[in-house]
Length: 114
Length: 112
Image (cartoon, rainbow over all chains, first blue to last red; front, side):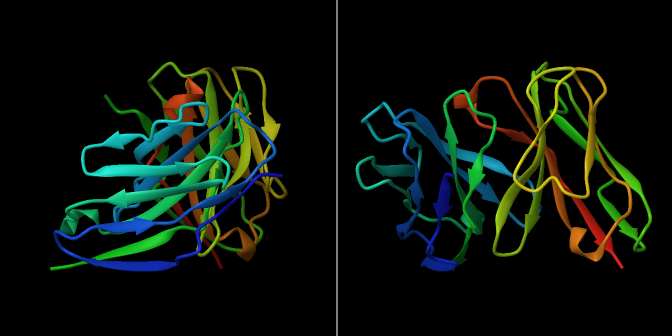
């Protein structure tokens, strides 16, 4: 079974600084998708960024970027120029191609200090 | 554009009571899902429906039943609620896997 591990239950960052959230996953598959979701206090799950495993180029969405290391099964999220609105729970997720079961990590709570 | 709509947003039940969580999506997605979220455990899949007329068990299906009423609606039923089912429940939908899941706003359920 595929599992997703987020080893940092909590992280904090100073406003305008950069922070990296870690995620590792376990799979024997070669074709899959990886995601980072943000959950602010409103409870809404918001897709931040996604990565296709067969693409070597790391995905980027404005201030959010990933470091995808397929051999190491690592998928970290970097948030640049952190803003107060970035404070939230962040979940890493894995999904095998053509499979309906998306697996989530336990989450990392990010605090942004003014 | 409403996306995925869940009702109710909050619910308190007594042990043994039953209830149905409703979910509807207006994005014409084929696949729909029910997840539960518990502290320190992320989100875990309860049931999913790959298309209208089909349902399958996920990681934690015990104590739940689902109905895919039509392409838009996917309900989750607790026949006899237990305190262990206290959780936040999310409905989600998707069409193309690479796009990820679109989530509803969640239902906070407490079973006393």
